[in-house]
Image 1 (spheres, rainbow, N blue to C red):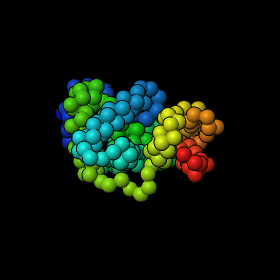
Image 2: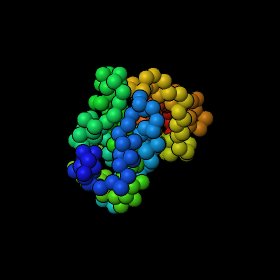
Image 3: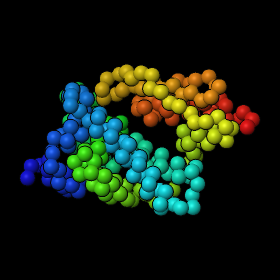
Image 4: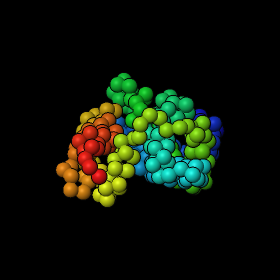
Length: 224
């Protein structure tokens, strides 16, 4: 058994038929293609589905707002990065020399992306049950955590908009800039007749959160 296969068995709980999927999931775009981006796209959606389904069953008496706050906390970049560190991802993630020298192996953005990519790899290689089992195990200690602090800005904005019959806010990625290990994302938030708001962040999620926060600062005190 190779070192990578052993790492997968011990850390991910799965014997991969195709270790190339793991190699891809651990490869940052600074090394070119193939890299983890396609698997991250898939894993992000699988993670969201599994967490949402778990919360729906675990908290039958909670409303949408409380479930949404729990959801955002569990799928946040910080939570994913913390799980990556516990799995030992910083030691195995693959970056070019410059990205590693700049601290890419301990970047919340990169580590969070890799965890989602690994979930994507588990889904492709072992199916939904395999990915679900990993998520339930890796997130087990966090599933019962109470939502921290105030409502997440995106959740608060969603509730504000729905209460006023404005529909759902939409977020559009306008641009991505900066080096691979320190990207900047520009996002546009649009909601009904209100002027759009653009905001930046070190991840698409962070940019969306900042746009929602700015919108609430401008309009939260408007009459319902």
